[in-house]
Length: 317
Image (tube, rainbow, N blue to C red; front, side, top):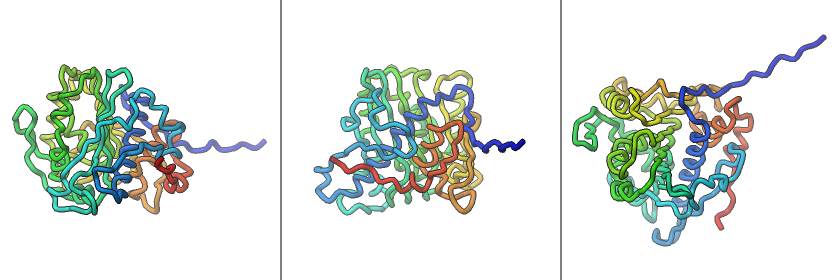
């Protein structure tokens, strides 16, 4: 009598309160935001003529098309969040308009009750330059108090989002979902205190923050501020980090003064590395690593990583 050994699986470990459907929606929108800035990089017409075409860019990892996001109004109507940080850090890379990079968007639900504040990760040279501005700088909370220190590059990107306060103050929603990957996750973290201060009548229990592949944003005092003011002791915000344990980015910056926020709220997965070593950058891939894991939580190993990573989005029409 022969027996077949059970195949090894690599499930997603989920902390208490983690909502998988919310995490799936957020990572799908994050991948759309990543494609948005890639489209912007390719423009040849004057910047004012640029038009965003939301596309299915993670089809190999997400099992259904972009139009499953019926909870969101047509993404082409989303409020694009432009930044000027390329000029601030001295990286004017895009030949047409590096001073006005689209770094994310605000999308509203069809019923008008929810808004999604979405940020992409590092794509442009200016993004990467911001990542490596690892010096700590003082952080001032929206109420004017000093609350530790944060990474200079992340702070620069957050502060350069055009008219963010006015745009958040204009929202009339009950629920707010904040999400980002990598650099975008760091910016999303910095947006939390501001959003609660600026979005009218927003209650903490209706704020949801789902981050993927987030680096460490600041020092111990800043981490304590976010945890003690917004996350712990029943304070309401649903704050979760999703981490591939072989992804090198959540370990960054490597300087000892940086501290990760809310490690107890971490959803994690650990399939065999998508590269020659455990800290391969492939493990950080927002689509083929993170989206695949979230849409396949029972076994997060993407056996078709190569085909996924080489997927070509449909043409813009």
